[in-house]
Length: 121
Image (cartoon, rainbow, N blue to C red; front, top):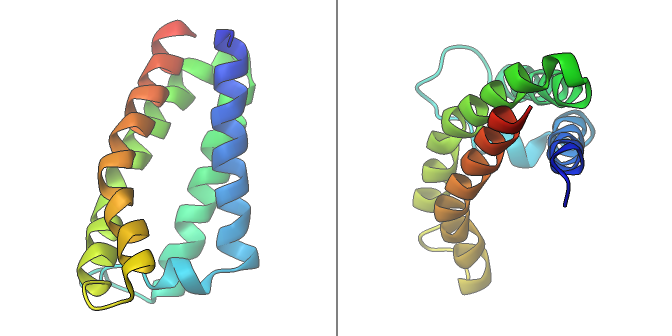
């Protein structure tokens, strides 16, 4: 895959996720740590806007390097939500637990992907 395609694929991933924050916000609301001020829905929308903004930056060659950095930071920033999900799903049926637990190590390849996009922009 060319570097441009890798960046566009990451933009599509983030753009889709960002859009889902608005179309189907409830699952994202459950990921928001209670310790954050304000409502979970507000944070769901803020993170959705962030993902859409980063996706846009990744699609423009002049802003791709900055977009790659922001994507990596975004993936790190949402990691506490994945930890919260893993804790909350401890007593869920096995398939749901496996999804929640699999999100934890899968976050780091996303960070690496974003940094690769940044480095090759």
